Length: 95
Image 1 (cartoon, rainbow, N blue to C red):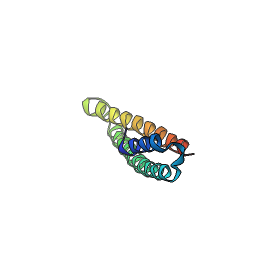
Image 2 (image 1 turned 45 degrees about the horizontal axis):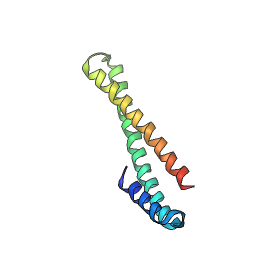
Image 3 (image 1 turned 90 degrees about the horizontal axis):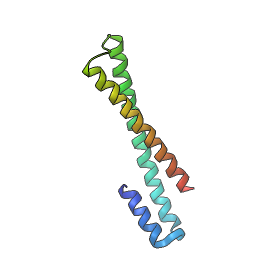
Image 4 (image 1 turned 60 degrees about the horizontal axis):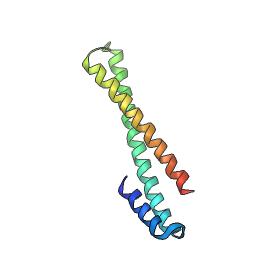
């Protein structure tokens, strides 16, 4: 749990549904953080796709380096997918 979510939970425990403005501020912070994270992860996935394509074009499709690139691309895609689900959940929670 990150600091924003922790503070949001504390606020909710203390004030319940009466803290609309404060909760909205936390949701906006979460959305901004999610947006930056999604942008970064999208760029990371694109980077590993490019590296993989360059290796494929040069015929380097085996060996330790290839396996590391394939795994890095897979990991980056999985992280992006999870971050997207979290971002969607933040929007759902907000409304």
